[in-house]
Image (cartoon, rainbow, N blue to C red; front, top):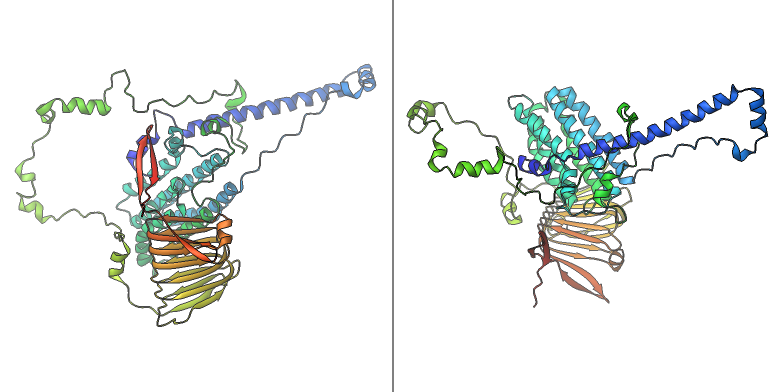
Length: 525
C-alpha cells in the first residue's frame, strides 16, 4: 500500500474520500439542526399556550384531542453497528491505544509515528463501516481505490517521520513501526490470515535490535516491543473470525457509489456552519478515463518529459560537468573517506523449503506443555523421541501450536479454538473439531485429517501436503485457502474410501474488457 507510485493512483484528479466523508457529515448535521429547530417550535407553542388569556384556554380545553398539537416525536436512535465494526473498535482500544501511550513515553517522534498508525487504523474503521453496508466492488473501480487513500496517507506519514529522523537514537523504533504499518493492507488480500504474519516478521527484524539494546537497560522498551508484536496476533485473530477471505462485504447492500453518497449509520457531530443552506450535493462522478490527456496545455507532467526528450542532445546542455577532482575512481583522497553506509536490510526470506532447510538450527529438547491453561506447545519432537502418537485433550478455550517436528503423529481430541502448524516435516495431525481453524505454514510432506468440523484450513508456503476432510466438514462448506504452496491434495469421502482432489497450481490470466480474468489450467490425463 505504501509508496509514492501508489499515492499518485490513490489521489485521482483531486477526489479524496476524506472530503466526501466531511460532506456527508455536513448533510447529517443539517438534518439534526432541523430536528432541533422543530423541537424549539413546539416548546415555544407550549409557552404561548400557558401565557394565553382564560378565554383562549377554555377554547383549547373544549377542543377535541385530535385538534391539539401533538408532541414532537422521540429522536430515532442510530442504527446499531455491525459486530465486526464494533469489535475492530475494541481492538484499537485494547491494543493500539496502550501502544501509543508507551510510544509517547519513549520519544516524541516515536509517539508521533504511533499516532499516525492509530489514525490509519481509525480510517480503517470507517472503511469497515462502508463494507458493512456495501456490495463487494470491483477492485479496479476508481472509487474503491479512493477509499484506501486516507489509510495510505497515514502510512506515508510514518515513512516520512522515519526518514526525517535517521540520526535519532530511536531509529530502530521508527523502523519497527514503519515495517509493520503496511499490515493495514490486509483489506485488499484474499488470504489476509496468511498476509499478516509477513509484516510481523519484517517488523521483528528491527524490534529484535531494540530488545538487544534495551533488554538490560530499560524494561519499558521491552514492553513496547511486546505491545507492538501483539498487535499482529490480535489483528490476525480478529481477521480469522470475521474476514477470512477478505473484507465481509454485504451481498444485499448498496453499490459503492450509493454507499458513499449516503450518510453512515453512526451519528455525526453537528457543526456551526451547517445551520444555513441545504445539504451539499453528492460528489461528482469520477472521470471516465483516468489517463485521458487534457486539451489544455500543461507545464509539467509526462508531456513535459517527452518534450524534453525530443530536444535530443540539447536536453543535457544545462548539466554541470563533473571535474576529475570530484570523481572517486580518479581521486584517492575521496576513496579514503570511506563508502557511505547503506541501510541494513532484513534477512531475505527463503524462496523454497529446500533452501530454508539448508540452515537448520541446532536440535532442541522436545516440549509438550500447556501454558496458562489456554495454549498447548508441541515442538521439537522427532520419530525417535515420539515413536507413538502424541495425544492431547483440547477444550473450547484452548489452542495448539505445533512447530519443528519431524516424522511424528499428533492426535488432538475434543473441540478447541485453533491449531497452528509451523515448519514441520513428515508430520501427521488428526483433529476432531475447532471453532476457528487450522494454519499450516512452511511445512513439508504434512498430513491433516479432520474427523469433525473445522471451518477453515489455511496453507501457506508448504509443499506436498494432504488434507482429509470428513463428510461433516464438506457439508458445512469448510474452506481450504492455499497460497505459495505446491503439491497439495484434498481428500474427500466417496462411500467408504477417500478420493484425492489435487489443488490447482497454475492459473491462466487474460485481459477482457480492460479487466484481468483468471482461470484454472486443468491437465487432462
